[in-house]
Image 1 (cartoon, rainbow, N blue to C red):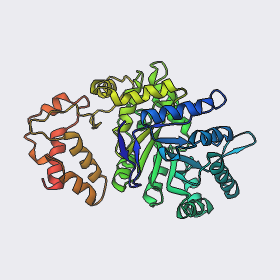
Image 2 (image 1 turned 120 degrees about the vertical axis):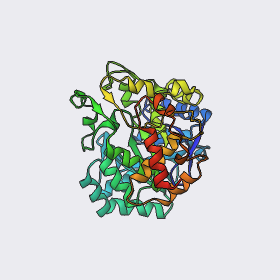
Image 3 (image 1 turned 90 degrees about the vertical axis):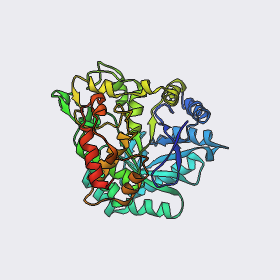
Image 4 (image 1 turned 30 degrees about the horizontal axis):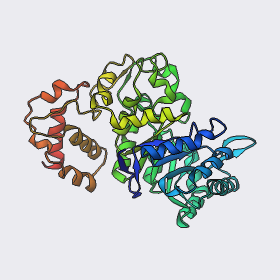
Length: 382
């Protein structure tokens, strides 16, 4: 298992995480089996969005004697009410839910406390100006929540939260179909067939800015819905018109700027094992670029996907990294010092490009690589 820094939190987490979708199976018996498997495979990061008390109790039992083996990302404002899951902003319910969570988990702290499911600007503004954020900040001050996070499907809201400085970890839906859709408050619209009736061209600029801003500010991204609920794995269901493999979906998410880990929604140990197999996959198996280029309903023409099909460069320039830092810098009104420093640490720079064109002849997306190298030289000075 490979591990990545979760933004600026100081946590080093497995790039394949574990979602809790299957924890309720077999009367919650699957909880321990999945956590046993996670520990065996080196998965140390678990998302626990569900407030189901039965699942929380099963997690608590499974954590006994090994709490320090896992980082828990659990959701504030996700509560169990009238026998079902509810999202709430009522501070009394939020506090009661948090207390129950800690009691059932049999722990006195949560590594990442997620403000749950914020998809509208109005909701975010109410959280910032109301008691929810105040309470979460108090939890952090007291060490009950080590780091503050937020989950969202809306890049506009997520960007505002990230820029606010309050959010250290963002849980966000990342896959090659969602990334083409504009911001909106209704998550169901991301998968609405009518939105894919006309060919979609290139990544939504706000989503691109979100990923790049997270990387620049050190906000770690944990990914949900990398498989689109499984639809991306089925040609008949995928709005792209062609199926991807689990490894391709995982690799796409893990190559976005700012991403630290993908929460693999496993309903069984076998499904978790299939996701963890990403670690042993070949570069050919991970390669999503040619599949993307052949999608009948979607086009990324002209957009660098950081897939490295352009390599090898005769001057040994890491074209994908140069392009990524160029995009990060262009997204800002002034040069971020961290981007400049990371660019300078590269072994070779855009200014070394000899314009041979070999990279452009190999790019599946017709990216103007030579022009990008010229711009990098102009912007970074080398």
